[in-house]
View (cartoon, rainbow, N blue to C red):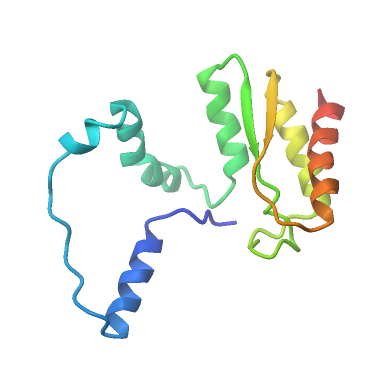
Length: 146
């Protein structure tokens, strides 16, 4: 599954603005990196400058969890904090991911394979009855693989 965050999002908006002749689209002024580096860590900025191209160059098309866990292993942290997004479920009103209940169990097991102390923080998901089932499936997958 293709990630939702990508440079094409801005281009879709620009294309539509031009298609309906909403007004001129002006290129931004270039102020260099100084204003950005004044408020952001240089390492993060450097990572963001190449992350999308690196992702594509590696051949990834949406395997975000597997890729992230590989990067985590390479980094060697003392623990993980997982922002547990339940809005990836197939019947969630805003979901395009279409994950099933079993997918959440698999995600939990995959996270456990990192073999790190892990904190799960509830993040996204709408008021649908399956949110409890899916959240518990992640935790059970995690526990069964630990």
